[in-house]
Length: 246
Image (cartoon, rainbow, N blue to C red):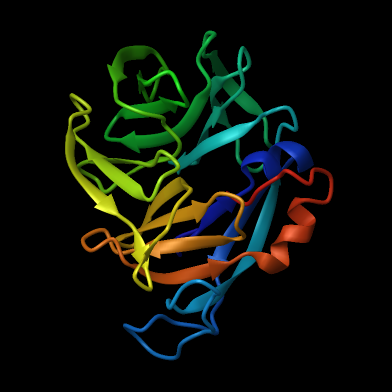
């Protein structure tokens, strides 16, 4: 997938045994290039529907918190007390090729790949684990303040969400905060930012317990457009009402 593809289904993938790949629908474009979609309630940014273009088998016991796809391998961070892990997965078959347990009491969260290092957040333990991408050997542990939810990278810095409206840009070697980015739309803050992806120069963030993904300008923090997942929500929640798009 070379277009703006991301996954849906943190709890959804775990509940339904599927990973969905999404694309922004072709009928709407943002204000920087053509026709606009409708506007979501509570915001003034245009909206485009997300389209599921494929689905893949997935371990139904895996409580997915972060995914990275690179060089034909899916790297997955799974959460849970005593069940957290870092995995290498064959995307098309869903086979777990390698699994490294994350010990209690850590609850693993977001995952990012920068260079040859994988960075894995933990939810409330204020610790990030750093791994060698090839071997999955743990090479470092880093500390940070607050909670860890989602993680991505712009190719130089790591970008962390903690469920608030503020994203933190971190120096990978120290986890020092380089800058913070409040996220806004229509003059109001966007709270509960969760899983993050860097897509074509934008930060994409799902909003926890809302069926939408924000496309965020990484310089201003402004939401320039939304991806609407409303039409996908019934399938995501078919077996678990608490499942959320991610």
